Image 1: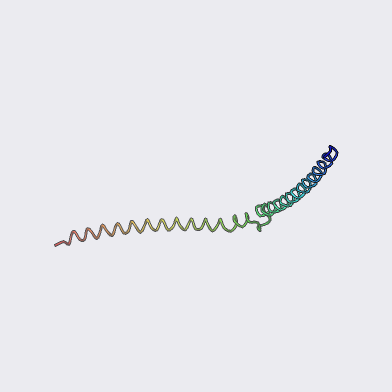
Image 2: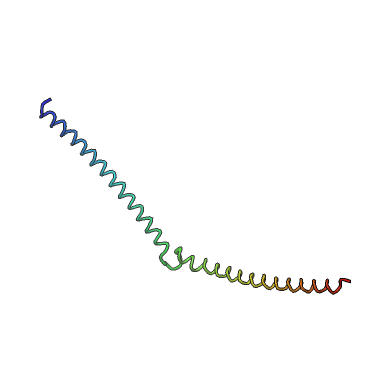
Length: 107
């Protein structure tokens, strides 16, 4: 094999490799661009749910509908705790009276 053949074969292999690498780079770039566009669309859609738009965004729904319900539930729990405390005091008072009655009527 002479030098011209080796150089020609090497150039062909390098050229084919370059074309292959260029094509692979183009495919990766295209896929990356598509993914970036998809992610940007998702981000835009998600962020639009968090921006106020006259009561129809997710943030507005949470602030206007869910939070008042949670506050009512919390107030309801406070009332229930107060009632439980009152019941415990009444039961303790009745236990004391019952013990006193049993002691007085042991005979």
